[in-house]
Length: 367
Image (cartoon, rainbow, N blue to C red; front, side, top):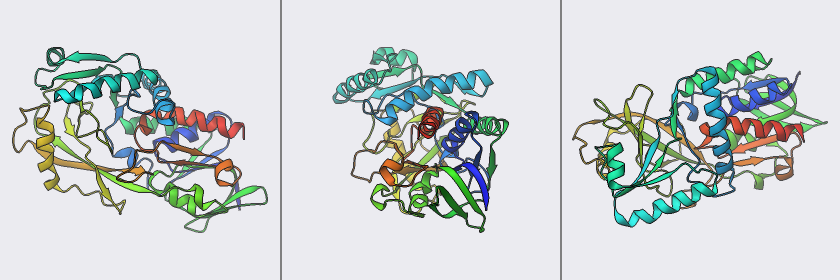
């Protein structure tokens, strides 16, 4: 049986960030990834937005780690000259009844330590974005975009430079704590023994935890999967900034984001599904996008949207429940010494990744 100090399960952006922090702290780290390459699931299928930390309840993991992570992320991207842009975004009210919601969002952001938001009236918002129709907006200048693949590739390079390694096609079949160590069996029969395991398996995190003998069943949340469909815009984007409507219950509405080439895309919507591999975009869903987008951009032409791609949110709250916070769980909650579970790491997980990595490394160091 091969001995290793730390095993990180999952090579998405969060798993790589955690592994990097642990390796740079002097730990021997092996990352096990079920797929054929790193970052092919949720980390590769999102809006690639650097979030400011606006929407989340004060004191929550999402609020704290997003605000901290944003600062770490911009510094990291700038230091390594990785592709990104601090383009800013406008959260828009399209009817007077939503203006109070903008003020509430501003107050929530301030409670989270985000102090750069600016409330705009309709004329001020339209001076920034002439094609925009709204009755007011909230400008977030520190929101941005990045190339998530370049970011993950850099995290992997940091991990390997610190002596860590990545093994792909290495799904974990089962695990257990025995005789002072965690024993893991891969689907191909490979046996490992580790002092520490971090479950950063994203969409499969709850399933991985359930396959660990001795893990308290009541500590493992029920997973839910919310598919988000994206549609791309033909032609040149009329906007220079990201445009978000006032948030909905399960997501942030059908918003406009940009890639680093300036191409506009709309989404994601919220489609609750049972099968995590159902990533096909039904073009008919685009019909509902037009009405939502025209609330803030009436100039959208018929036929201008085309099915692009979809992503899957690894949620731990259901369709009619408030959105759950990140769960960072140690043996005190689940009963397995040396094991850390990361559950429900959806948005703003990409922005928060470096902060999550530092936090988990500190947790493990003091365990």
